[in-house]
Length: 305
Image (cartoon, rainbow, N blue to C red; front, side):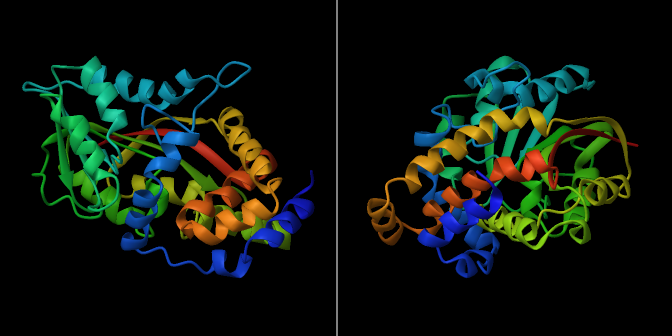
């Protein structure tokens, strides 16, 4: 199915202008995740993961959702501290990532930070059964709840894309990290500049972004530069754009089935919140964005100088 045909299908069910003009304030993002608590559980991961899997074999399997965390595991083991190792996750969501890691590393102290009123209540429930997981409400642009040079490793998965001030985030992370501490980013970015995209490709990119409440996916090179300028060295990066396609193909299949419901789909769209139903648009188009190269997905590891 070509891109133009997909856009025409979407137009039959959704007001495209309404989607691309959506507000993306922190309050909007909190509401998005609050509304989608059930959606992610039903359609993606019963374990509470909200990121895509990285498939290194032929077909998607649920263990692929652990691939980003394996990179975090690797660098936790490399962290050296005279005291307990401290790990901070920015935008912890339901706390599923730390819930997994805290059981692998019972000797490590984990902190999960997220906006209030989103999914942080579920993270607190997860943390209640663990002695080494503490949930903190806050905005990752302001880490004032953490002292200077107090953390060994910071990681963020599929959430830095929500920030329009990534250099501010990187500066705060640099402040709280100990010397030679690690900053791991797993996220999606835009590929080529807009000048190389067709009108329909630009529209597709914007629909994918706004369907997930992202204001603007920035180029990977720009975000990397923002981080490096705040006192970091890049020590590892991997372009896994093609490896996340098996996950997003599952989203595309679900979206296609939804559109085939016809009148019932229109009724569902009318009844349910936009934050829920607009995911269908992003899911339908994500494979095109990644396969065509105007969207990319990277694992990046930085070390504080």
